[in-house]
Length: 155
Image 1 (cartoon, rainbow, N blue to C red):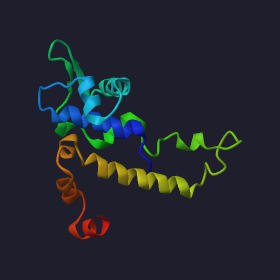
Image 2: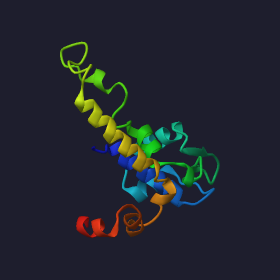
Image 3: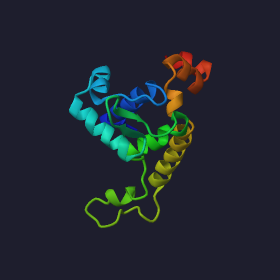
Image 4: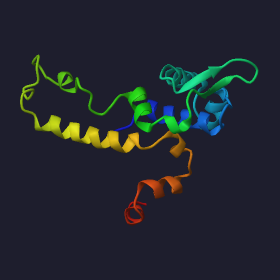
């Protein structure tokens, strides 16, 4: 699984808004400056996040963007699905039929079973992590996600 720039930077923008605190808003230039992204690109990402109902635009002198929901109610799975799609979508096999109208393995496909299992595991893992969790520092997230014996080996 490879994350796209849109997914990575979209998450960073969303975390930046969430970090401002409940009821606070952050402007596009503030997000761009803090994340090292162009104002144009941040604008595009914030528009996507607004369309996904993760953030809302706030008008006025203290305007900008604020969370549309509590960070505890926004899962990593739903944000990733919105920003870039899932790893294995229902129409996946239709996209890879080669020169034929239907994939030659459309009836009996062990690869499809593999991708479904991987997608299921990803869904379970990412549905259990919220935006609120991502507001923690890296060591706290590592502690939450990795058992201590595996963490020492991977770091």
